[in-house]
Structure formats: C-alpha cells, structure tokens
Image (tube, rainbow, N blue to C red):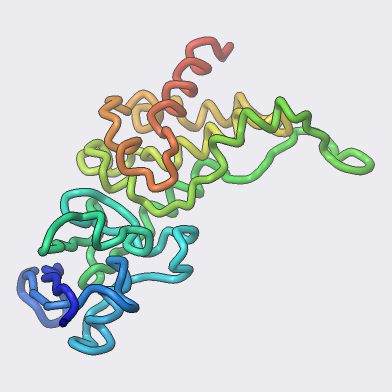
Length: 237
C-alpha cells in the first residue's frame, strides 16, 4: 500500500527571471524520511525540482533559519510535523515584511540591523572584577524566560507595525533589549532604555499579541515590551 501523499503549494519567485510571484504545486509522499514540512521541502528539492530555494541549518528548532509562513501561521519548517497540520494541502510562503531574494528566502538585513541597534551584549558599566561577574539564582531566573529567543524573525513578520513603520525596532529586538535590562550584570540600563524610548521603540507597539502567538519557543515579546514601558515611565531622565 502506497504512502499518503500531500500537496505542497509553494511560493516561487526569482526576481532575475519572473515578472511576478506565483505558486507551484508538488505531490509529496509522507512517511519514511518525510515527516516534517522541512523534510517535504528537501524531498521536492532533491527529487522533483532542484531550483527550489529555502533556508535551513540545524533541523532541530535551534537556529531559526527555516522560519516561514505555513498554512496561515509563521512557524519553523523543521519542527512542524506534516501530520499536525491536518490537511492534504500545505501552503508555504516566505517571511513577511522583508524583501524576497528568491522563493522562500528573504533578505534579513533590516531585521539584523535592528537587532544590532539594541546593543545585544552585556555593558557592565564598571571595571571587570578580579574573577567574574557573580549572579544569584534569583537574578538568573529573571532572564531565564528571555534568553531562549532564536532570532527566527517569526514575530517580526507577524507584527503589523513592522509592515507600516520600517523604522520600528520590532518585537524580537525589544525582547532582546528586555533580556539585558533584566540582567543583574548589566550596568547601563538607562542608556538602553533611552534607545527604545523614541517613536520607533517600545511605545510604537500596539499590543496585538501576534508575536506571542507565533513564537516557536513560547516566549512573550508583548510582555517584554510592556516591561520596558513600565521601566520607561519610572525612569528619571
């Protein structure tokens, strides 16, 4: 008895050849080595259409590179089982609000530039100690729920504000900002908060919770942005 077959309807666009984007359908057998959406994409690329372009790396939900729009929601292709979609058709689109380089591959430069703006590294604000920066278990627990972001850009693409305001830092960058603001080893909280205090920072968030819904690590960017707003209100400028 043959394996179940699922139709992959994949967004295709090569700016050097195509006048406009289009969708192409592929029939993919499910089972064996084809269990996840990413497995299906590799099956297409290796056996049906070698021209298909997409990103992937770890295949374990760690690197975030295979993020895309899958059946109406931004997800990681590597940890989305085909069976969980409960559909004989899987529709794939690239991440939104970003330039399409080819097919499911987008230009992430704007996303990374906003990440750089929040200075994603510790700034102790004082000379280093003789041995190490100490941190209590309680202080560490404050950042435990923030450090698992894999920078997949699902939240960025789901956010309607990043579409309408190209300068908005976006939920991923703001969550990362909160990660350092909450870190007891960082000594430049005021400097950090000033970065997100403008019209394109924390105040630009409309609290629609799209970012929270799509996060593959079940993080809460909306909550982090609310934390930043609370600190800004009490900050002595």
